[in-house]
Image (cartoon, helix red, strand yellow):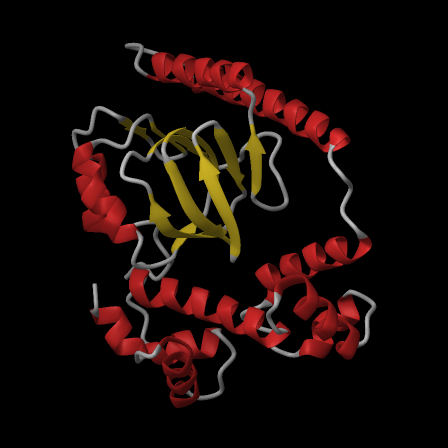
Length: 283
């Protein structure tokens, strides 16, 4: 039995990839060049539950718009945007425009990776140039014989290009305030420890703040409490494990640091309005 989370249920993954001319995939690399009409049903199913992404992703929005969350942080993406998603991330699709289309590359060790998901707004000429990299990688992948090292070099080139664009844009933008920097550090800690540590003091200590100061900071920056952030992180992990693994609810409760399955079930129902077992079966 495979108990690790999957990006898609196996039957959906086979449906999406099998014979699809817009997808290239091997053990360490995947390239989706276009979201065809035949993929829309699968994409809509993704909108019902968070998805775990074990590998890095480079996403280029070619048409339309979409509202996403990556590791609980919101992203409003428009055509012309690029989103870099680090390894071991959680993606939620909240909404997509009717004309939404995207290219994305998944790679185990993305060169020039980022500690957190990063949205890069591109000028028209930059967006077109990045598109040429994608087109060249796609062309190389479909040669009768090709070297994966060539693909890695091209991917490294596009990531370096994007890093330069991002750094130049950052120089012209207003720097984050100290409070915004602390909030960013807090969300990073929640992404890392949120399923194990649900005590405000733990995060306050890591940020060298008092619990009251941290609570006030998070409330002022986001309008939400520290516990609301921690509960969302726990529910996010729980949904992925329930929907994309066959592990017993008791095992999931233990992994999420609940002493009893009944306590986890009560928590899950309180936060979502549905029991863990009903959520798992409601596919």
